[in-house]
Length: 121
Image (cartoon, rainbow, N blue to C red; front, top):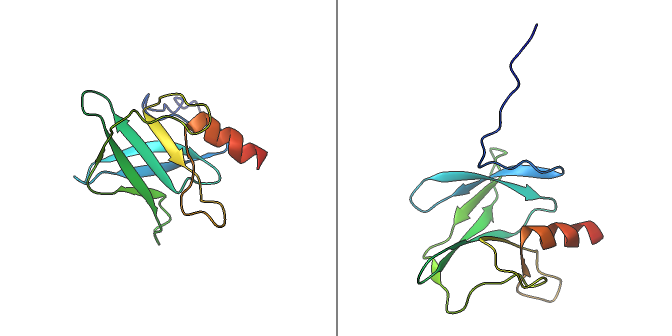
């Protein structure tokens, strides 16, 4: 029996060792995103353009086994462009590490640096 190969939408990137998560926007719309293990505490998306704003999505614990990040209100307007805390590159998406013990904030890293940091931990 020949079956057609399944296709992956172009906007969904599958990464080995990653899980699919849902980003739930404040207006109810949802996006799918691949996130690495260990899971980021939050995801930050930067809207490009004049008066750039960043949208923070906090990981929500749920009983339905869906990995969900919910948008926090309101979007933050950036005074200076956001950069990765490790490689200092500008990206449109960042992942927030779990804070180290004794610290209140986690590092905001691009997905590449987050994955490298998780692999070396």
